[in-house]
Length: 405
Image (cartoon, rainbow, N blue to C red; front, side):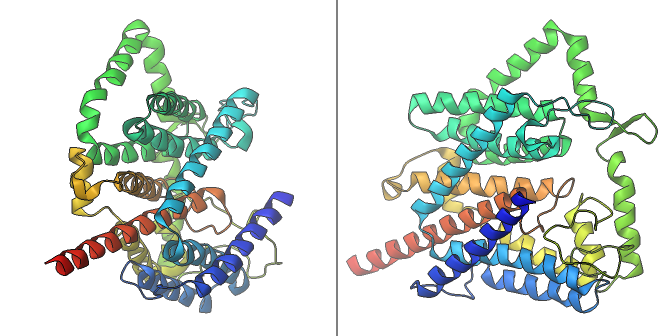
């Protein structure tokens, strides 16, 4: 449709203009020690599956769009964007998600049925997609409530965090809730000195709700954890409902263990494919686990490539010095003016890791033109920009120390 054409057009334009900007930029390195080499290894290994794929044209298109997205963000954006631009990207994401959440609440489009129960879909038309956006927004707003120096913006972030977590519950997107828990644990790790002063309030509010209406509250929690399924009209938790899909992925992997069925392909798909800008109607199963997705599509070689990509994301974690600043929330003289970059680095890394966890339960990071994967890799790229900025800052300090000594 029109939306599909627009998103592919945006992806192509971003790659073109990003590449031109990257070529004309100075002080860049293709094989930098900050992860670009790992990205190239990942792309090389996954491309090998195209030679053995069940449908080479389909797999080549999926691999190519995925590669364009990663190169645009992890190479072009990360290597030429400034720290200030990276922070502005986080602000734009926060505003965009705010618009989605507020418009969804205003329209109240929850009348469609999803299996037996009715779940809140919002303007996106999908409860899971809305839940994913809401969990990302919740982490960004919660982080803002912890780090924003202006009281009015601090309160606004707190209010939006409450709205976002309510939306997550309304969608019953359990994978989003699991990812939200991971992100909040990471935020607690980095900001535990700040959390100690604030964590008691939501705990007390939660206990108050349970005390006022224990039966209703427990019933809602149970309905959130389990869902009705059309097969047996029973209840299924998040692991049981995905077990058949995971088993199907493993069956496909065991049949072609080394190079798989081709990137993005799976056992049982047709060998011929008419070129289209969507995989709808071609893929017989939803993506609910990225490890199994790559195992079936790219085999053992794909698993090795995924480990290199995972290491790339984890390599963008804040340095020990930045982590000490975040944990203690101190402002030593040498860090004056850089606190905002440290805070931006922390939240970008937290969202990146939380989204990788999300993709083990729902959706996939390997769809080149979809909004949720783009958000994931955009946060990874922002973390990379801020990690590079901190490294350059420390080098300048070292050179200054040597020159003055």
